[in-house]
Length: 156
Image 1 (cartoon, rainbow, N blue to C red):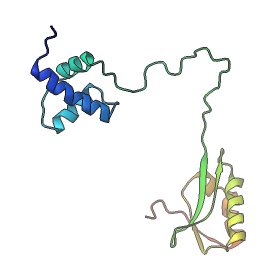
Image 2 (cartoon, helix red, strand yellow; image 1 turned 180 degrees about the vertical axis):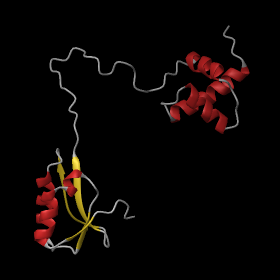
Image 3 (tube, rainbow, N blue to C red; image 1 turned 30 degrees about the horizontal axis):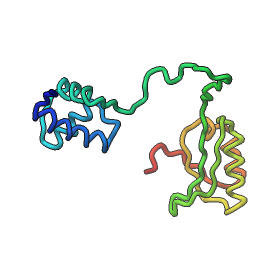
Image 4 (cartoon, one colour; image 1 turned 90 degrees about the horizontal axis):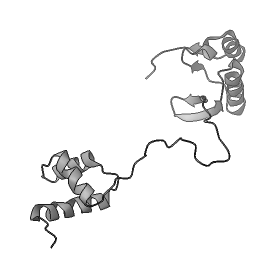
């Protein structure tokens, strides 16, 4: 004869329903969900009931990056991409943008020249204090195009 207490079957059913709604709930997440519904139970009891019902939450396990039986090893490609955007502050229109994997001074001036050629030159251009915007190449390009320079740190 299988003995099952009333409290385990009642709360086991509630835990089961909550787990079906969100299978990522671990013991602490289940405790929080039960607490939101007005039930106060400690982690030991919830863990015991979840084990008894064979409920295992779905989450990333250890050693996911360990090499299995793969024939090819693909390295993690780490690096940075730099987004440069020229935005009309008044209308919030993106006049031009580009992605680059380096902070070369030429990439910003190329973008600026393309945007000026496509739309028209602005009266003032505002940039941050990055090295690509304080170098002589950037400043001379702006002067050549007749654009005033504004290097504010906080414009908003």
